[in-house]
Length: 134
Ligand code: T46
Image 1: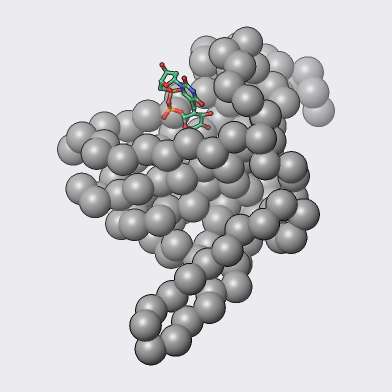
Image 2: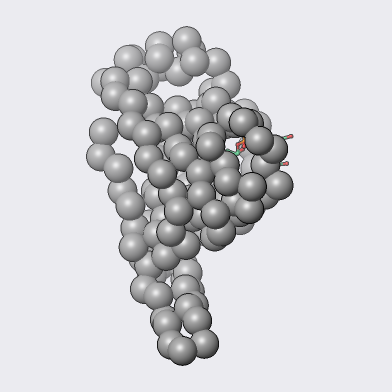
């Protein structure tokens, strides 16, 4: 599985750093929704689903967390701890997020509004669907 890490341009000076995310400028989709996770409790693992259509870009604005990404064939774990970097998550990728630092703020840009029917929350079903897809 190819992991697409997107490096954002960081405008830094003696005052600090600034990253700007603009539609059609380094983001591989039209942004329809932004949400963020924060105050995640110790030892919590969340996600446990894939999306049928949704494409997303996840950015840790503060702190760190780990992602497990699984396309049904391969599983990859990675640490997100850089607010100038985003991870692009395609549809039909199972994700779990864990090891959240106490201060972690995880922002996600999505190409569609929230739609529960787009979720595959059962791992066996995900494996079945991803096998049929290849
Ligand atoms: C994903 C990972 C990275 C809404 O009402 N609107 C929203 O836009 C979202 C994302 C969630 N919700 C509600 C649905 C649940 O009642 O917020 C609650 C928590 O959502 P969920 O359990 O799906 O959260 P995670 O952390 O398991 O997954 C979320 C996203 O849902 C998902 O698309 O890829 O973050």
